[in-house]
Amino acid sequence: MTPTTFAPVPARVERLLAGVSTATIASVLLRRGLRDQFLAGVRPLRPGQRLAGAAWTLRTIPAREDLDGLLPGTRPAPGLSLFDAIESTPEGAVLVVDGHGQSRTATGGDILAERLRVRGARGLVTDAGLRDVAGLAGTGLPCYSAGATANVSRAYLRVVEQDVPIGCGEVAVYPGDVLVGDDDGVIVVPREYAEDVADGAAEQEGLESFIGEKVRAGASLRGLYPASPELLAEYRENGQVRR
Image (cartoon, rainbow, N blue to C red):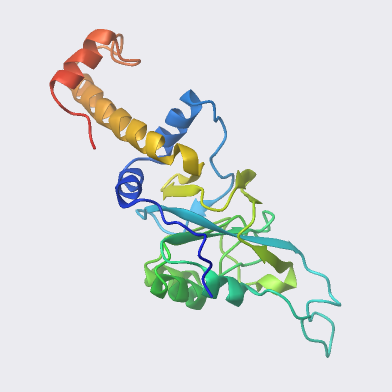
């Protein structure tokens, strides 16, 4: 059953964040004192995909042969499974898996991703691997991982808990945090910062587009980057702040 505590990202905030780059978001977060929210070693499955949604988290621990059905003639001990987590992921959520940076094992494949898509999830993010890459791409679900592998998850990892704080890509991810992904990778925006960061990033990208036009017209970077008060006034007079 889907928990009732999950809250999707408000549509306006999600739209703005999905339209700006992770690099811009990183700059905006830095000005607010958050310096390292970008997931290390996590890359998009395919170029051109965009991701924005609230985190639904999944914690794992290293597998153990006697408990995870790895010994001949044994079966996994009862407990939470990856399938359970998929079936619990709410609409509007990004399933985020703490895979301990285990790129040699998968924490998802094409069928699981297709089920997430059908349930209305926004995407799948893991700092472990993913398998069935061709099939994953065909689902259309934005997927980010540490790479491709054919190995199954239970050979290395045991799922133990969901909807709890986790680490992914060396960044703390709390339930409900907002994840944004592009071709560079994935960045985590704390939920309480999301609206402010969305507005700030949209304005910064509008300003940088304005600066780019100036540079293409032959202007020097001095006074443009960082923007001088005169340039900011000109930019705002042109009404180019995006909302």
